[in-house]
Image 1: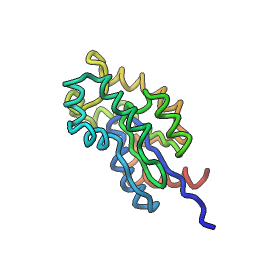
Image 2: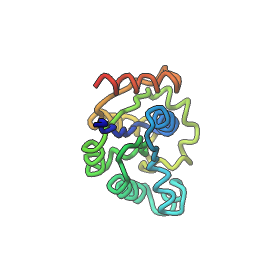
Image 3: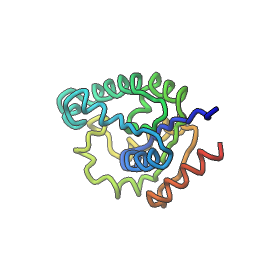
Image 4: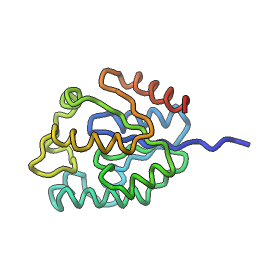
Length: 170
């Protein structure tokens, strides 16, 4: 009998590499790929930034929770939006049905990677800096993670190998 394949959910800050790594991981493991940010944009017919501008960051988080609670999770790799961890019901559902992997990248490296912070569609309070957001979210990422991969000094290929090795050793 074929062993059930484990679905994998990637969490982490914007710029951590969730979408890029997710596609490569899905291809490597022979799983489908889903990106919750894309699902939100398709359902709302708006970019994340347009949602944030038009309706506010809390509306964006609400739409994200709806996607987390309804997204198909079987046999797939899911790249979540950076704010997925604000939805306890959504994260508990993901943890029930998948292995949650936190791509941990230090603040300094994220600041190099994310140069469009103000226009990227990041669900944050208007007065919140990237550093404040990082500190607030990091505790949540660690809380929900089954596996933590330190990716600050790794290439995307090295990160991919680290994730696969961690999954295989569970």
